[in-house]
Image (cartoon, rainbow over all chains, first blue to last red; front, top):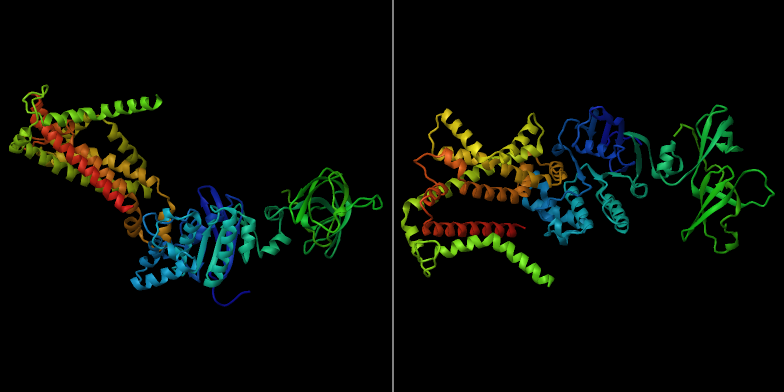
Length: 367
Length: 255
């Protein structure tokens, strides 16, 4: 979806090194206007560095950076039309919530009246108007975070940069704030660039997620695409639980790949990839796509195993299956209240299958 | 039992700290020429202190010297601390290490080396040389005090200010300085007291034209402590208490 107007943020072949250590490798990316983009990755993958490059706290070693079509590669943070919500919130401890929120407008030499109107509007948007006179030390973690968001959005930035802003909140509050952030983005229409290591958080809020590893974007797509068709094993393993079966390609005809998976002949959907006969492959399946049936001796083919453990989760049951080959598989089954006898018990022998076509086949890259 | 033991311990500690001061204040009201015997309450030493213009002049000079050198040391020290914290420049490590050297070098060495310096530079010994010396030995204490405060400051506060459009000067004036303020005041007070009671360095770098209080008292007690000195010390103690109290109050209001 390319439009004629420039993207909100554009990174062109950006890399960043500290001495011999390169943390961002040749990164190119366009962030669209009004988009909610999340950088997702393990700690130390470089996702926070990307955000700091956008904010201007770090300068790229090579490459260009544009905000609304304007080259800002060499510009300091105070001359960039983006604002950051810090992980530690970084509220000024000697100022009230109002003064904190007014800081950016004061720096832009707005009139007192305009500052008052806009700060009140921003504080109202995050439901902090009644705390305007408080100091940060008199606020709870969640309130401090709202104040930090108000301080950033009051400047009407081209993009709001959020550096793991929810990591200090407890699980319940985090869910609430996630929904509120989404709602806030809709209301304000500002581009949000979010950084997190929490896959659930990334998926529940974002339009697109960029999975980062070792300073490289492994995959950038809508959350459902990343979950359902991961481009490689790293992405597959990082986002949610997944079962990985080893196999070897035998012959391919279009998308249909005949292969041996865990030593048994299988017909797989290879998608757009091509495999040479004898090439090692991995077949990936989410636990919820695994289907189990009780082994009754009539079906000799397929993959068999024994239920090693069952974990009751309320709506679902997680089953750990140990295959005859000694591999541990996890499968999620919905609890069937109408037929409790159909449930599997520990020690039971089962045949493992999956919903046809839902498997993801990847070349075995040794990972 | 345990409780009374604790109370006794506390009394002993505070007694050790404050008894000498109390004795001094009490004897400043003693109607006797000698220190050891109590002859009844009197304000005569305060009266005679008020009449002793040379002692009062020395006290005023000392206060002026302490106030001016503390102020200069605090200004320079605050800037030094911010520079050491905020910027990376050649010689930063050496500068930072040299601060600690000054704090631990013996006063006598400092006094003599400053004296040699002033003589080499042909500076007349007096207020100027005292001022320069006091600024010198106060400076590292101010810098270290403020540096400690700044080290405890969240680095992202500076980034947040820059992110919101603040330039270097605005960051300094609106973020760093207000946060460092308690340490700046503490540094000033520390310098003030260090300067006020310095004997050794001052002994070397002052001239006959400019007599300051600690040296005056020192020369007076060589002929035996006069109760007048007790009165003077009591007055100075009261002034110190008031200054400390006032700062505490100011800080409380700011919070």
